[in-house]
Length: 464
Image (cartoon, rainbow, N blue to C red):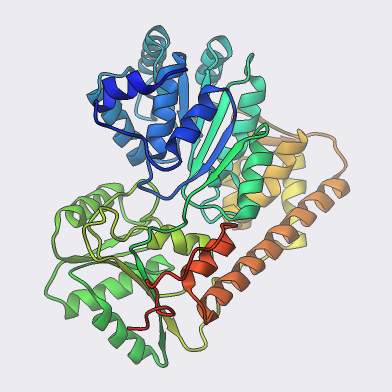
């Protein structure tokens, strides 16, 4: 299929695909599944939008972030392309109207993985299956990943229930080999084209700054600030404490962003930081997917991140418009452990939840009664869902009459595998921090890419 006329009509006569975009578009048009691992700014959305327009059927895009969907929907609307965005603020009638309009105009439908579980949405797609299914931020399906979302695990069930299997495009910015393999296996991608871009833009300078005392670390932080700086901290409490210290010391605006802040306050902080020419944002990893501010000059990690994948994602926030001198500094306090230790799931907690599910319980009741974190509940509930022995009706979770011991063994094995994977991720992060060679070369190898020549854009190649 020829997509050149569509590209010219909607993106302009002088617009050209670049890099690996033509290969991705051609594969989708030839009905071949695709796993595209491209850093932000490399045009992932253009690939599936162009393919969807050329295929001339319904294109369903599943994305975890409201801001990301809103931005893409507005871009399509500005080009006059039919698009429907289903979100939680719409009532049933409004959703139905949007779905019917999208079907008649053979356009794009954007929705979250949570809304994919709606009987109304499932009934619609059982009658009008999409020709192209796009899973954005596909790494969210993997329990090994730093942004795991349980609702992504239900996408394969949705695909299997469709009367006709669509061609599938899975897109994400970074994924090491084990997460990429998880995406392929869980989504059931059939001999997909796998495209890997460079994990980081080449112009970002990488530095790890050793600090010998907490006071020395604080002084280094002040020394490393640029006019527009993003600082990552690991917890909400640390984010708030650091923001207060900086507000007391600096004359420029200091903003704060974490998941515990009310949504209007987060949005206000985001909009302010986007428009400031000088300022500091202190944030947790919640300042992540879907946030695109082009002129951040420096990203500073106040603590070690939880994994190398998280580090690459966060460092990639620097210099996106390629018009600023971009750099990333990780402040490492002497003796600081590598990565955040994962609290393992205990055997007695598994038995307690299994017995509660035998009697029947809701998810909020499990949270409240047993005070288990969501990560541990997910490790218990997801294997049960996959085995088909957990039934859900009117928000009540009920285990069938399956014997408990085999279910316990399954959950225990998988929880140990998650723990082992987390330890491996911490070891990889330690190796990155301690390497005596080019840091980009290390990242290339960690993400299964062939290293290029030393980068001259890291503290190992260019110590100054």
